[in-house]
Image (cartoon, rainbow, N blue to C red; front, side, top):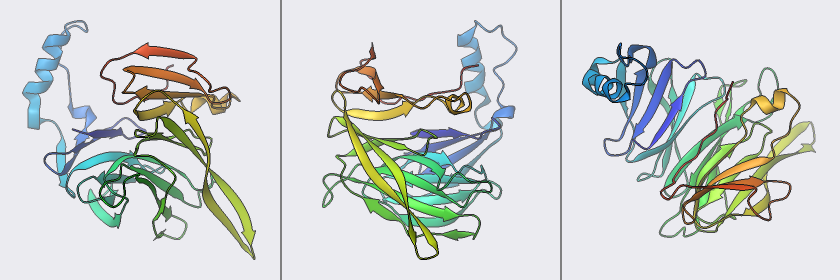
Length: 276
């Protein structure tokens, strides 16, 4: 397994399996840890392993080497990247089928999705894919894939340069996207700018900032979405610094040095959740 996503209702788990070139659709309700008490974790884990294929599971064949995976904001679509083929897939979660295949940058790694313009109903959303790079593309890129549900149309993908082997991707729900540059020892901030072109509103991604980190940042996350509902802006960026063997908490307003660090010698990936 390389990546995972859970639908907003907590009913489905989606897992990319790098070696078998598949995405697993798992019905979370069919997975039971058994009747043991909560602190008998060894027995609970053994129960899960014994269930194996008896749980509600469906495996969908995709391209070679699936890595990143993310839900679209409306939850009816899933996006998957395959590192060996350098492709992206749009998958319907209602029919469990691939509806669109598109090219990405070289060796895509991680995916995030966001609204293009956060209106109700949404005009569309964008999938961001960190692409590590490779032969002929030593620095890597970030691929953008537009989808407009109001028109039922996919848009041409575009690759943004200016990164250094991007590996991690995070959308902070303030309509900013953060990229962990594993070869450049910094995270990048992408935001959206709007301009008027005749009667049309043009919305374009803009690379606005680089924040220095420790060595080899591989993953980036931040505060959960509920900060926006209590009037707070996102200020903390959390980075997995693999080369430093730590997780660093960076203040995006005063990023000169980490506000706090945790030593984790083999850290690869970080994520944030809503803690009630």
